[in-house]
Structures are given as C-alpha cells and as structure tokens.
Length: 486
Image 1 (cartoon, rainbow, N blue to C red):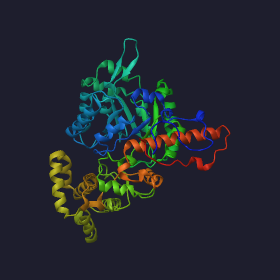
Image 2 (image 1 turned 135 degrees about the vertical axis):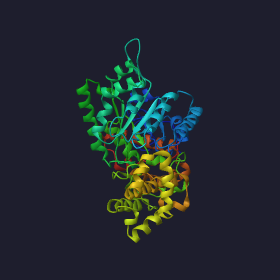
Image 3 (image 1 turned 60 degrees about the horizontal axis):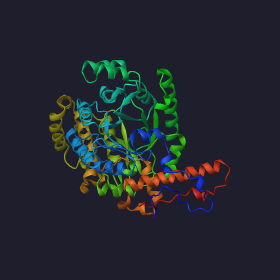
Image 4 (image 1 turned 45 degrees about the vertical axis):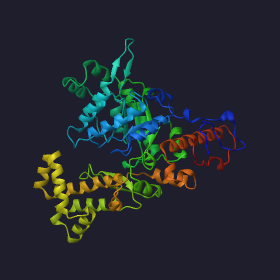
C-alpha cells in the first residue's frame, strides 16, 4: 500500500531525491495560505446536495478545500447542511464553503441564500451559472470587506467565480459596478465604506476556469480557456489599475487523472478543481445505483441534454449516456417543443413517447406541475394556462428536473431516466484505475482520489523537470499507477 508520507515512490533506479517535487508545492501558495488548506486542490460543489456535508468534511480533513453542493436546495436544507459541517469542523474552520448559483428564474431565492450565508459567517462561496454580476453576488463579496488601521484591505468573504468565458471572468476580476454598489448602499445591504472599498478591488480573487465539465458546460478545451482568462486578467488589471498577482486562476473540467492534474499546474493554474470523479466517491450524495453507472463509464460515454432550468433557451448540460435514456429522451422533448404548439398538436407517436418517458399520462404530470407552480410562481402558471406550448415546456422541465432527483434517491424503477452530470474525466479516471484498488467503489473516497491525483501530478512534474534539464527519462516512467494511501 502507498503510505501518505508525501515522498515520491517511483521505484525507478534513476530516481534522484534532490529532484523530488511534493504535492504541497503544486499550485499557488497564496491560495493555500488564504484558504487554510494543505493542497491547492478543490473538491467542487455538485448541485442539489450531491457534494454532501460529509464530502466537505472529508475534503477539509484531507487538507483540501471542499464546497457544499447547496445549489438548488431549500434554504432550510442548506442551513441543516451547514450545521452538520460546522459541528464536525468547528465554527469558522477554514478550507470550505458553499455554492451560490445564479437563479433569475426564482425571484428572491438568491437573496435568501446570501442572507443565510452572511448570517452564518460562511467565508467562501463558489459562484456558478453567472453570465453577469447580480446584486446578490456583489453584496456577498462587498459585505466582507474592511480596512484595517494600517490601511490594508481585508476580506472575510471570498468568492470563487466559476466561468467558461472571458467576458464573464472580466466582470468578476474587475471592481463591482458603481450602479450595483449604490443600489446596495441605498437598500442598507452594505455600508458606504464597504462600497468604497468594493469600487477599488476585484469582486473575486479566485477565478475557476471551467473547461469540459459535467453539468452546465460550454465544452471548452482547457488550454485555450486558461490562456483566454490569463489574457483577460492582464487586460482587466491594466484597465482598472489592479495587481494581476492578486487574482488566482484555477482550472477544472476534465481533471480525472494525474496527467490532467499535472498539465493544469504546468499551465500555471493556481489550484485545480475536481467534480465528476467525486460524484462516484463514497461521500457522494448520488445513489449507489447511480455511482455504479458512473464507475462503468468510458471517456466517450457522455452526451449533451437539455437543462431543466433553461430548457426553452436551448441550454444544455453534459450527462452520463451509458446505461440511461435520459439524454436521448431529453433531446427528443426539445425537438418536439420546437416544432409543436402543445401536447394536443403532437402526433400519436410523439404523445406515446412523451407519456412513456413521463411514466404516466401527460395530464397527470401537468396537474402535479400545476400545483407546484401555483405555490412557487403563479405568473408562470398563468402564462402556461394560456399557452399550451408553454404548458408542455413546464412538463418537460419537470421530467428533466426529476431525472436528477431519481438518480440521487436511487429510484431503480426510473433507472433509465437518471440524469447524472458527468464529463469525460469520469471515463478517463475509470480507465486509469482499472485493476487498481480504486477500481472498487468502496475505496473511492475524496481523500484517496485527491491524494492519488496530487501525488501522481507531483511525480510527473518532477520527471518532466528532469527531462527539461537534459536527462533521458524513459516513457514508461510516466506511467503512474493508482493505489491506496494510509
């Protein structure tokens, strides 16, 4: 068994101790100092509680930064998760945070979650699905700003901005817009002093480049995306007179092997973030049935499917294809929505397909949808009552939403309708660990996954450094095998 001694164990006769690189050395050291972690490694938030409080606790205990997958959960459920984390780690413990997802389609939700985070003193928030800054993410960032007696600006709230486009990254790298700051001061959400500071510093100091990831993704290649954000940082800092060294760019999406992790750090990533591979971990909120499906996936066993939250706009998420019909059914629903004016306008074959996917008559699903919308969004319901096509869209959105719910709960009667967010990293991980102790699901803890990726990345980096100095390193030396750490 591998022992967690943080020393390389290549077992190569050419190994040189003085050439060793340790996992703690990878990434930006200001990241680990700022967030109190041992490693520049983030266990990313997976929405609707798939990144469980237990996963966050395990991540922090292993020296990683963990984010609670609070997106899409009710505020009271989020609060219970925060209680669990704080009970285990202690109030004010470093190296963990929670997810804030932009939800313009749910008026008031974003504000309620930010209220909760600020009242509980949550020091780190991973902001996702933002195409532009909202008042609430600016409020969270600005509310933690203060100026010490010596004039140094301090932050008690840290935003990790997950982005896949430079134009979005620029907004988080720049100071908050004056119009939003004035609005927040007028509402009493922040003080004039906090607004003054916020006008001179970036909204977020940690920018996560989200490449080809599971769930919402632009399917960006990691290399071009990372370089694009580096350029955006330089230009934004030049425009606003900021120090580019203050803004850290991390990289996630496609990181499921030591080679991918090493490549990210070699590009200059301040930290790496993993997602899909943790969904199969023992601490995951995904059901055992869903985790077994993930463990069988290859790198190509993924597909794009309509997103439940932005179905009408044509936005898609990347999901597991192998073993499910979810992506195929979701895409067909989208095509029907684009060509029909409502359920009554569908052909008999289309109606049969819809009701087979729903598992019940269309009218039954509509009544459930209607009751939910009456309680949560009456305006949307009124629109659907007057427009059969919009009614059909809401029913399709319900199916797409419950695909993820069935996967979390492990409803085996709906196995073929599981929506499991998954990128190619999951398949690459499965190929890499085949025949190793990590092939077994029971050994896939976030700690074992992370330490293998980090230790492997450190050893590969050391080998490449020796090769760059002129040593002849055989190709077989770069074959890092997964194992268990004690």
